Image (cartoon, rainbow, N blue to C red; front, side, top):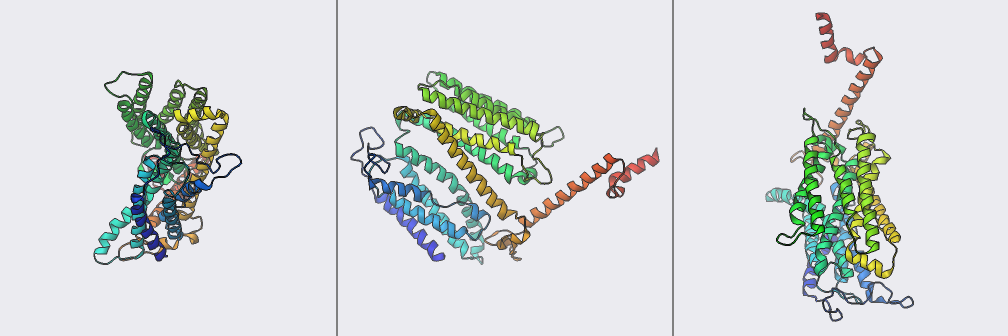
Length: 490
């Protein structure tokens, strides 16, 4: 396995030099355009197949190969094989990106960012090989500590930068987001990705994050409101180019930023009671609703763009409304359905994350150039919206599958299925497996068990009080002793 990793690392490093020395052909690209008129699909006409673009599709498939931080986080035995496969596919995709026919591309951000992504991948492989050697004596003890941290940070950052690179690839393939369209593209793709990221965070907290949320001593709306405030401050001062005349769009975007930080500050204040106890509130949900209403009402030049923006606005407004109903009526201001089993959820709670996914894809797919392409191809807005909703369904499925895999590895229902790496405790340096603190998992499991036992004890006491007969557990409890003392005193 180490030989495979070393070979993959060598390929990654060599590919950087070859890519830097390679120059794309640009002789067929019209002046001022980002792509040549050649088709990117495999068919030049309905009856003739063109193999000149096979390299492009192979590049797309290989660069989206299997890689991610989940096996690394849970210390699965599949971590090294999957990462090795991902590296090999990525290296193959890197070469294929420079060896294709058909459509030609002008210098673009996708090609430039690929070098940085490949450097991160090569670093990840090198650090992984070093950690796999288990060199822990002498100076390696200190080097291993920082290498482990860097390996974890880079591994967790790869999905984010890979998402960015995929967006760059889609933009480059169509020749979009150049010259005057750059600002509008940035707004749509950044905001759309933010909605998707918020939906992923809500899914994470719903399925596996309740324990972490309790340990922070804060309500979820505190973090939501804090992020909304920061984002609103940025939008307030960046949506208008200072020194130029104010347009209707500038007024709308700037006022939206003002609403965000105003509502965010209120949400932060309402996230705690006077006694300091975490408290739920509806401010983030109201901000989502208002954002959907405002952004869905933007005037558009094309009818198809008006329809898609309106659907986006309705979807985001629905996300805000479902969040309000969830907090107020489903959870009744609690963090979860069942305090003793935080992983339990209500089916209604999955609506808000999905609607945020759909809102993000709808907004990313509603740029001026995309709308012009739809109008040119005479594609119905209904068909386009259904495709974007389908992508949202698939992403939601993918996120739920990953979180379910993580939960099964991290907190198996059967203790016999706990990974062996979590059971091997190194008594000398207090680490397990490849270097994570050994007692954290066991301490967290014991603490959660004690909390659950205490909550069950309190529940039994309350039920006994309601029946009028104190249970045997309450006879010796401090509360019952104080009550007898007060009665005797009276």
